[in-house]
Amino acid sequence: MEDFETLISTGDFAQAAALLERKATWLLGHGQLVELRVAVASLPRRHRSLLLRVADADAAARTHTIDLAAFDALVDEAAHQDDELGRDLHALACATKAQYLLWRGDPQCAAVAVPALAALPPPEDLTSPLGLVARARLNVVVAVAEVMLDASGNRGDIEARLDTIVADFNRAGYAEEGLAWLVCVHTLLAGHTWERLPETAELVSAAAQRLAARGSGYFPLACVGEAMLWFLSGDVWRSFRALEAAEAGATSLPMVEGGVRYVRLVARLLREGPSGAVDDAIDDLVSGLDKHAPELANSALSTFAHLHADVGDMPRAARLDAWSRHQPQPQPDDPVGLRVLDGRLQAAGGDPVGGLETVKAAARALGSSRAAHCQLARAARTFDLIGEPAMAEELRTAAASALGAPQTLWEMLLVRKPPGPEDPGSPAREVMVRALAPDITVDVDGRSVPLGNLHARIVGSLVAADRPLSAEELIDRVWGEDATTTVRKRLGVALHRLRAVVDAEIVIRDPKGVRLASASEGVTSDVAALLAADPAELVSATEAVRGYEDDFAVRQLAYDDWAIETRRWLRARWVHLATRVLRRALETDPHEVLDIALQAHRFAADEPELAVAAADVLDATSRPGEASAIRAAATATWTD
Image (cartoon, rainbow, N blue to C red):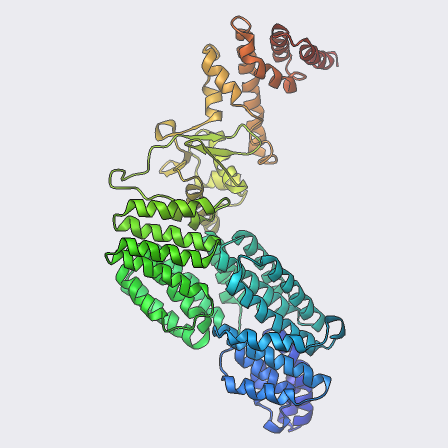
């Protein structure tokens, strides 16, 4: 803007205004709101065209520093313009006013946006940048309103509208703003429903990187959206990484600071529990949101009130609940969420039956989203705390039936039944780690839990090592990196999340390092069973051989060097044991090991002794065709 400042300093305001008109769209599209407002303010009023005043109002609205009367004056003035520019400015002024109303929870936002959208020409006839931007922003208001009103029922419509929004911004040269609204709408949609949280976080992360590459002022805002989504997903490490990026990026958007402080304070409350210091931090945060991002104030208070209720601090929950009644309520699920809190407070106050009905009625109003069922699960905690286990179990069961896989960390914690007085510790579990299969799974009391690649590497490393591994050894196997402080933290987060995913303590950290829990601690593995099997004990040896579904994590850990070596010697152990089992079964009942003989076919070409034993079993069970095929495969290899 050096040319603009030079023109201002020489008093050439007409040229400065013309230059700023050309720059205004770029400044808005890149989130340079403060710069635009300063530039407009430096012009005498007579040189501030309608375009510049609409752009200035737009920037002011997004920094929450303008009153509604200013919008009305601009809308009226633009409505009296007869040309195409006047039409587009009228639409843009309406879009700005609608957005301003939207963020304050005023339902009139749609009443402003929808008629203005209908007044624009058909999409194929709208080509001016201002008109495209106006239509995109009017569609933004409609899309966000749809998210807030009924996100569970019209996701496809919302995403289709969002595609149109991004396309219009791109055609107008506002690619950064298109990405910013992509981030905003997807963050609202996922946060409103708790659906597709990790996938949406990845999408927002990719958009944030594109904004960073463009040097956009919207980059920190995208980082805040990413941080919130990762936090809701339970990935605290990635959430804090995104927060650090948001704090490092300069921005003129006040909601960025509020969003960063909000996520950090939620984490602090979870970590430290209620305290006077946390009370002060909440008060300070919400007071700041009142001034600069009031659309977040009520949601923040609702979150903090529920978190205090989760740990049984009902006086603090009630204080925050009362405060929230005086805040703007931009999202219809905010007051519904507060009615769930009303039910929790009602139950804790001595009316559990009435409280239960209030909770269930509020959850029904939220619909069938994951967020609604999470509210049921967290309300169950209150009934546990007041000694009403049957009511708690009713809510928890209803929540668990709807919160199918994949569950976030927080969902897993919410639907887990807390230990009772007669059961102060974790209940005894039968846990089997199954690694002799394409993918590693953990069976907990008969329930199979698949592991993601990161957890599979951790558990597979410990199973293969059959001893405690130091943090450095485990990090080298899992990440292949030096044991930096950051990577150590990632290991700690991964182990904590593994405990929540499996709902059992299968990995132990002790002074000797990190190890798989032992059989005495309730955890066994098919690998340990295979290695420990005695060929002389036919029944146990046969069971161990049958546990070999496939080579050690052959699909999930196909390219890990340590897993390749482990795979080789476990296969060799299986071949040796299976050969002994097949030979001994010929002396008793070969029909009992027919399945093992058929499984041996894939190794027959490389293992002549196994091939002979398997063929003999197949002959003895009247399957000469399969026996001949194994012998033929083995003979061909021996001949070669």
